[in-house]
Image (cartoon, rainbow, N blue to C red):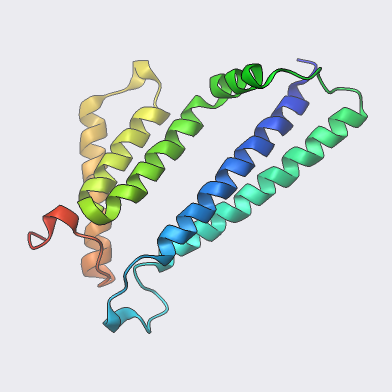
Length: 178
């Protein structure tokens, strides 16, 4: 396609803006994680990893924005910029090209909203299960495998943090059971 690089620049710009906005919201949420007093002086606590991920996501968002703007500028200078589209056409095109990415962000936002009230174990299982199904082609999806793999990963991560690192994770509705 003649405008493929320009379109990639537009996608990078839009994805970077969405990722940057999400990273800021994620960092705000990570800053609100309650840390037990016994761990508050420690460098590693319940909010350390989420804050690290938030910073990394923000950096990646900025990189995408810069890369998108540079690509679009270079392609425009080379005469490879398409005619302007209406906003609805641009949104439909973006949705068709990036549906899985948008769905992943929505699932991640739901995960963040559920982790405190529902608990780490259940919300992580649901998050991983949803992500596996979003990222797998429909014809390759195996429901049983997705359930087992999400369960093993969620329990494994929970055990590693709770018993290995001695870091409490949100228990939510399972409080007192584990």
